[in-house]
Image 1: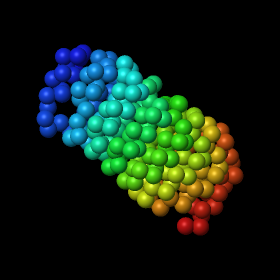
Image 2: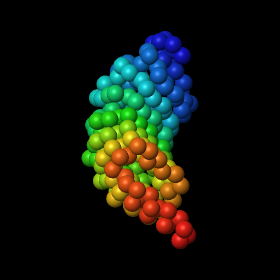
Image 3: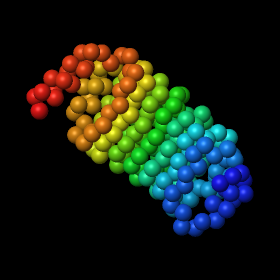
Image 4: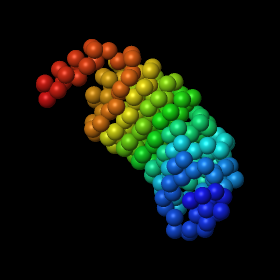
Length: 194
């Protein structure tokens, strides 16, 4: 799909449930809002530019039935946007916020509180997040995958919390400098006991 004409055509699909606009150069505030629909269940805006935080917040508010949302590498994503997701999209199963580097624990904690059906959360490169976010996310009953690589403020406390998350199947903790060898030994000891 190229440019504004292609986006105008997409907005006419009345049964549209999934929309992939990854790296869409023609996206702007006006045409993103035209695509908002309570019928949308999945949207991928990965690595898109040209939209503001306010527009993203309005967009997710108008899409309350989203089950999968990818806002990874979208510069405009802030706590305001993530709070809009948390309060408007309670049915989310998958949330991808990689490289949304200005989001903080404040919004991630609210996501964990309100989006109780999350199964996969990607927060790689979200460098402002701390153990508080991990603590909140590990309370999610259905969480199976959690990606925290390059979250430089995550510590050994998070590793100990992750171990007790009942359905967690996959965790990414690459390049988290505050996770020490002690945590790795702790995980190894658990592996031997089970």
